[in-house]
Picture (spheres, one colour):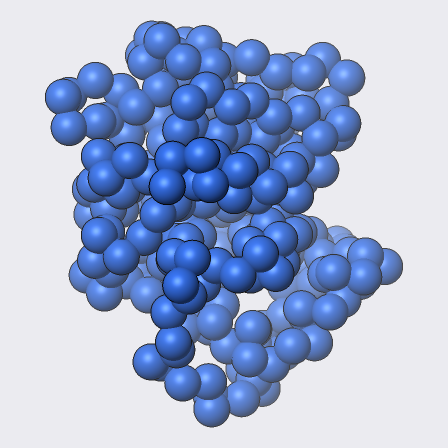
Length: 256
């Protein structure tokens, strides 16, 4: 119920956001990073609400922009995305939920056709239940990420955001994570008997392993667990959002 209320409140807030934010924002000298989000409002075709995880977006965003990077948002359909799992007791989340210019970015996410991969140094797949739908199978978004990776860029994801890379291949045709350690929200913490899980198109953990990746995770959970394997950076749950963003920056500093 709390998440549903959050979704209703965010719909109101986003609708009321100022649209004065310029579309031709000056690009950062350090480079641009793309956050990939989902337009999905429900678990599959049910009436069960889902959303993008607000903390996983803003905790990473805050680290990246504070470091001097420019961040854009993209979604399969473009435009507004559903937001949930909000905790205004967290100072960073509270800061951004009442930031009209930032919230307008989530109201006006870019389409894949708006994106030139050569303009970006990294992608970050945010999570939430919505991340399981629309993003993983989107060929245009896969092509963007694949090109960024080919340009020696970073691929990163957190929690259910790792679903976005399960079908992602490098230019040589191999899965981007083949032979690499990968993290995300593990099956251990999913309720496989629950109605929400029955709508998931796949298990992140099983798919990664079946495709030649090495899915690793913390059995404790909620402890900022993450993995870095060359230019692939993945985190287990919302608590890893900050450290994943920090590792993106560290990796870019090493490769530039």
